[in-house]
Image (tube, rainbow, N blue to C red):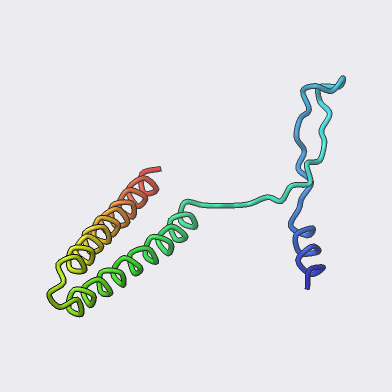
Amino acid sequence: MITYYIHHFAALTQCSGVTNPDAQNPNSQFCTDLPRASASSANVQHILQIFIGTLAVIAVLIIMIAALNIVASGSDPQKVAKARSTIIYALIGLVVAVSAEAIVTFVLGNV
């Protein structure tokens, strides 16, 4: 299995001619043997949307668990305060995740 990935990675590498300014012959080129990656803004935006969406789902789950803790705490003020602060922090995280999504969409849309 590992050899498959090594051969697949080796197949992706392409010899790209890069000018070597330190060589005695200024027109000489050498091979970097590095893979060429083609990342477009659509790919980056899609990956970030998945990541930020996952963070938003986690924040909503934390809010739901904290709400259940409030209901289950009864009249214990310490447990209610702890669950309330958890909800506040999760809401702040949710706002940050949604804002990050908006910023990424705006920036990649204008680049």
